[in-house]
Image (cartoon, rainbow, N blue to C red; front, side, top):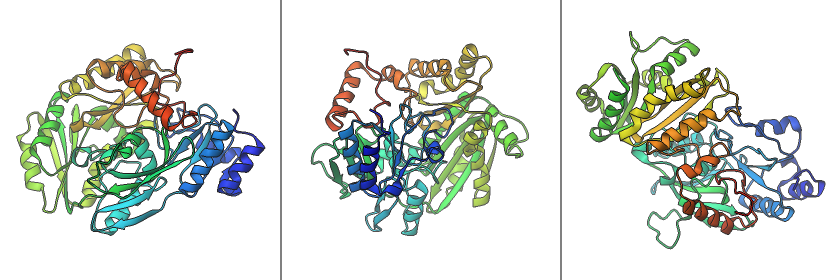
Length: 461
């Protein structure tokens, strides 16, 4: 049912205030396209609740009117999961950005769904702690969005993904009721663990409005190494060797010669080494005391190392990180990319990295592939440029190759609308049926982000 009705918009205005029901087409445009520019939709309104009570009222109103809605935070998603591709109403959670109940003894805080990761990190730092989840879009990406996709980011090998940080949740279910369990008890086996259920649910089960997050001890001394390898295989082996032998390891990021060359060209930077090398690892270790000696010793023990440079001071560390974190921006300078985040088992990670460029070239000769990712946990970001946004031939090729090699079609960004047709590559019919049963229980009328994650059902199914 259409969301563009005066009665509906009036009721939504009563719930959140008329100024927070946006209908100006020029304003709406920014909420209807994803970060890549590949996924574009349309909406009659963006509704901006300021608290859980208002969010619950919005959901209840939409349910009565039979109107679907898409929860949206920083809109940094990459798979079309947070834009109104089917004309849904947008429920923007950006106003719900408060960070409260900071416990500097227990190492916990409560963050609204609209709080940015950078905001959580800064709040944690101010009380002598740190937050374990980090990625390049930290200034825009929100807590609610990271929960929706169970984002991991750069430091999964040390702290785990978002699911590992969430010790309490508050959410509005599809009938407008609220579940709230923000006590933060680390040991609580009293029934189903709803925080785990909501992590990765992509807004299909409920609208997460707040979360109780665990914090981690801060790292006082950091060392970063950029290590070049003669082969992709050597880099992959090294990533897992480092994970096994460096107890203070924080991050192991892999990228290839083509991506490094693109970053240097776009950002007008000199190359970090005199000669090009097929594969590179950006490695960070952190501890209370400098891990320099341990990291250098570990790098020196690796096979296939062609060159290396180490940074201890912050400006130089940032320079080395720039080569990795600038990949998304440099790639997007070539046009809207197809972004396919996958994960592979260690045994087939190098094979996947080697095969992707040829597989892409075979089905799309004019396209270019760019690969980088979190090597030590098997995660690879496959970016493909030179394709129309709606040409899915490469998506099909890459996702099928990943599953053929024992991997998953999504390791970071979720399923969204981009990959819902491929969910069955990783999930059995019984699992998909269980997913649908859970959604029906929590969202009986199917109004919460109904066009993502779950495959389209055939009539009568």
